[in-house]
Image (cartoon, rainbow, N blue to C red):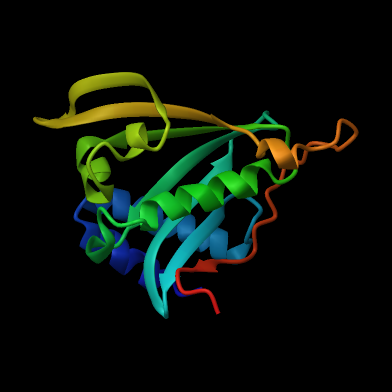
Length: 177
């Protein structure tokens, strides 16, 4: 994993302040040292180009609740299906060994606009909170939540155990081979 590649796409998004980029870089280093222990990453590539990624973790002391730490789509992929596909991959992964999962994301106007207009609401999330001008004038705070379930035709058997780890080790490319 090349942390610089993730940092470059994050910087280019224009949605992150310097302190946020420092925190993201530290989090990515933690992930690189122990993939899957504290954080998981799903990435989407357009050939060899990183088009977007989602960094998330399991909320401590829960079996089914997850926080999206960073959800970044490259500036050339804004308002394209990259963000939607990243969410689909995240949801598929989270319900793979669970009866359901809860996804929570805290974000700002600037971060969400870097993904596309009304990205989270249009993706089925419910808004739990909104604080106008929380980060700065015209940069509001939002918290969204979404419950996800396995497709009805792929429901887990009643005897299947819930997993507290996602076990995601792979990425999914935009151009299937």
